[in-house]
Length: 186
Ligand code: FES
Image (tube, helix red, strand yellow):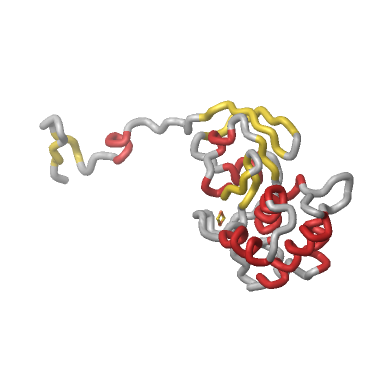
């Protein structure tokens, strides 16, 4: 076997092990954060590389929030952060420090579905159901700011939430009906 010169000019047998070039493995850095999820305060230590949806699903066992594309395209992972819909797959968990987060698990109260959830059922808005949590969270944010949206406003608000079953008409009808029925409260 030929000797292979290294950067210092000395030589060693064979190819240099990659570990020599990359240095010792280090543990992922972690950060302690506090956040409120569905009204419950949590103090958790998160790896800085974790996304918010990973924190919700894997650490807090809130698996209602779904992962579809995992790259800001489908909206399945939508949750509310401080009242605004965000893609939880594209938010780092550390960014949620101090935030008030609402997930689909926070919509029902005392075993009763929210009027919006009830409208989804009555209008057959869920088909396979995978996109439904994200649709519900985006629509909840809309109804919190536009009490009685018309169909055009609902379509505009839900533009970032894809439905692979293409059940868009029923979803829009459900949100419009929830607004009309509730007078605005989602
Ligand atoms: Fe986040 Fe698709 S899973 S946008």
